Amino acid sequence: MKNFTRFLFLAATFVLGAANVSAQESTEEIDNTFRFVDKADNVIPNGGTYTVYAKDHELFPGYSRLEAVIDLDVENTSSEEAAVAAHVITEKMEGGSFQFCFPNSCPPVVPDDYTTDTGVMESGEKKDLQAEWMPTVGQYGEAQFSIQVLLMEQQGMFNYVFSAYGPKITVRCIYADPAGIDDVTAASDATINIYDMSGRSILTNATPEAFATLKQGVYVCEKIVAGNKVATRKVVKK
Image 1 (cartoon, rainbow, N blue to C red):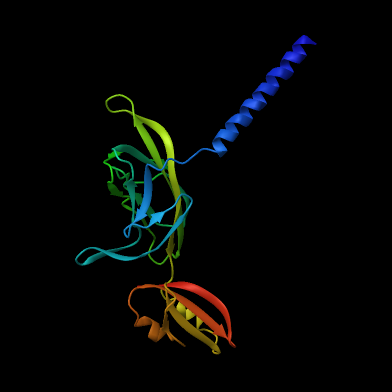
Image 2: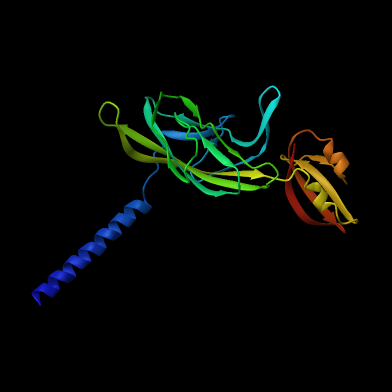
């Protein structure tokens, strides 16, 4: 009987300990030493999503590459230097390859679950992720990545260990068919209206020929049938 009572006590202690660990994990605070910002200094908050579209980027005169550039910086918001790394998970990638060069190195092949090296950033310093998804030309689809900042702490001359979790964001990359407007003009009684990403009307009752004259960018294509909006989609014009 005594042994059985001791077993129940140990079991209860184990369950209570597990519950405490779960509670600590679920209430874990995010360290805000670092933050994600775009090139206009807009903050991408913890839990936020950043969407980017693939297009041809000129790498040097006469040579371009199809890529969705993740044009974000990590900024040190503290009053002193701090060490940083990142944890990157590839959640979805429909073809192509992914490059991630933060904070120092660029692995030739980024693993699906990848923790970077550690770098030291000065107070107020911004460091570009230098990341892009390079889809296979003509293979339209998406890629999605989660990126979380890791605050690191120095132990010894060259050794760093994990200290705290920083913000975590989702990056969604889209490679859309630039000729997609042809699909929504199939119905003879359909009216196609084109808007820019701010909602400003660009073309009314558009045709593929008129769409082809627009400058490069991302547009919203609205399909109207019998006075009713039946479809809306984003179209990348290259």
